[in-house]
Image (cartoon, rainbow, N blue to C red; front, side, top):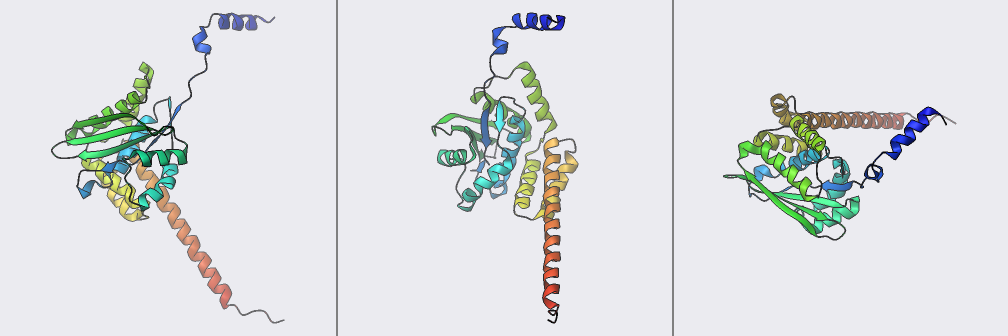
Length: 259
């Protein structure tokens, strides 16, 4: 038997059984837009940005498989049309069954003055039960710290224990995506909503000051880049439509060839 095979077999024989055990499957999680229960219309779209940022944070956790925001958007169109609230277990279960998620994170902005308060629930889709409820409260100028605490609480409530390496990875992800000011997050969220409505020009103008203030935030940059990509695709589609319509009109004007 070749020497390298003997070394390999010896190494395997000394490997603890636990390291050979199959790894636990990832928990499939979806984060829905947070509801605005503050009574202030200025924050109606903040929940969209909050859900996107929370999804970005949780994506750093190896034990979580997150559903893409675009896939969720396709499913939640009906909910938006009916003006249903997301902070509701029935809504969460419906979305979970349509998307295949095991757990749905729902949240609400419960207050903004004098302090910002965010409530969250984790719903297990299979049973419809609320697994955990949590809230974070703090000053508006401490928005980044509140968001960090919320992400870590959600991870804990999903019964996921982070290793030291996992803690470092999550912290690095949050620092890269950092947005300190609530007002900046409101502007970014409004830009996302404008883009969803197809108003890419206004969306670009709305997010521009946020990009200027947080040029190193990957979350801000990715959001702005996505708006630009969607605007570009929309312009290309409009151009193709105009060309096709022009060709059709030209063809209709050409008299038929004599027989």
